[in-house]
Image 1: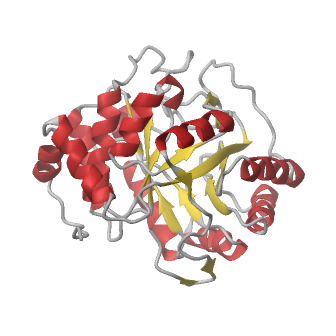
Image 2: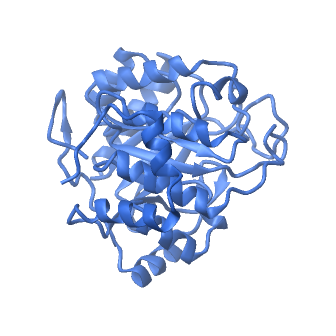
Length: 332
């Protein structure tokens, strides 16, 4: 079996990423197939529970209040709206619901109390619950864990060196601190990045190295292709070549063998063949449903047709056990 390492060098990862493409895919596919469940793909659904009006200046995000985009500011959803969306996602084959709020950070107020109730409600539906709410403290992370949260998403977005070009309203260390707080609460970590921001290959390598050299690999690593949105500073960025996505996924699979690698934003621009190459390279999760927060995404029925063609099957919720308080089973 492949050794789990947390001491990768940039040179090692660069050699993997930059190797002959077919050799890279073969190596990643071989590692992926060491897991007997390689044909299982987790279907996640992403729901924007609080849209727009964010004070951050993330250069890619249409929800930033300072940019003139077509995203309308919406209030926090009701619990009934969330459970209805969760049921729709579950009926479509999803085993995880990720709830996203356009906040800079979690505040200890009535809105957070409401999110806690949402987590409890969705958890009771036998769905893995994930949240992405911005920065949070250790105490807030523990409150979410006690409510039944399964995972917390907090993407690095890009490398530490490139970070301030994309976001100036918080630091790379702020990201790492939130992930540390999530770990202290014994939650699973979902953290990845976006390619196509104008970053260099070295930035991609550095971001992957940060993830792979954490004390414990993130249980989930989303690989996103930028979806340019008019009104944002990155509106005119060119589309990411599919081979760049394949290289990122394959490299992530090789250096983090047990991690769920998520083929995330950008799928609407990919053909079935493109996506098949990503699955071959080690992707074993997708986001399904009409939208990823505010950007378009393939519909559930399209994905089910793709699964049938490729011989893939949806992964069940809580495949490796639920989290119970501070006790947890061995999770991947």
